Image (tube, rainbow, N blue to C red):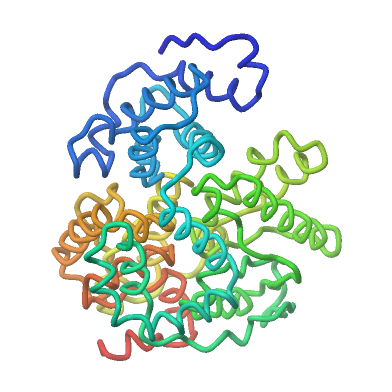
Length: 435
């Protein structure tokens, strides 16, 4: 794609990077076949190619974002299926990240949209606030129908619909600590506690810690670590996202210096994609660029790490698992085989749902901010999963778990919860009902 940025514009390193990305696009259109919003809506401007044109026009002309640009960029899930598909290597992820930052700086959203986004940014990255918000949501649930009838308030209805009826008690591993290996020591890792996940399903990190310590891995839950920044990063709130990244880099670098780390374990693939991108996000920060690169290099999804531990194969247990590959796992991190290999080795029969490349519609806050499109994608995903006739659904991202669980009766678990059970750990309550 030809571009016509001025030397003055290209002096901005973010514009210069976007210009290089734009020049790689050859308009081939392969991305349209795998883009969930184009497949759902059929609008060229809701495809990666269409959004690239909008972004190019906005940046080249140094224009503030307008309502058309915002509409179509907001509809993008950042699922990155287009990145997997693109034969030219267009780095759409960083291009749309730049566009979202530009939108946040130059576009005045309608008042209700602003308030809802401010609420999400204020609550979701903070576990204690999120826990309080979920308790309040139970009181507000009767209002969901009223909110749904007013377009500007539909995101509030989605929040109430997604809120769980019960909130699990905090994990016994909720506080900073070091968990000693239960066998001969084989390694030392830090684990990301996260923000929404420990509130919605603390059992995920519990299972991870139990499994790793049984395998001889020392697990550190460092003091001061917090939200990875993904939620606000995808809302264009770059300074807030970078502040989160810097805080976590400082925390993990202290652990690296204190006792060394073999890996930083992440159990939510949406977080993993962002943490693996810290090196890029902080590339212009002289005080953090090198440290961030080191942290990104150590970041590993739990399944990515477990594959390297050579877990022994187990006998078949008779349970059929439909594996849902989260977009942030398969497209963002290019991890496709490891989770299924681990589940098969652990004795499960694994089935791949049709259209596995398409997003379930969760995508961070997307199922709140774009409820209509999200609902269509969820229905399509659930239909394909249920067609596998599986006993259980496994995935590696809490957002997907929450989204899919709201549309099916098939129990859904994190991959590591199944692996923990198979290799001698706690039997998940959701499996008790099956046997």
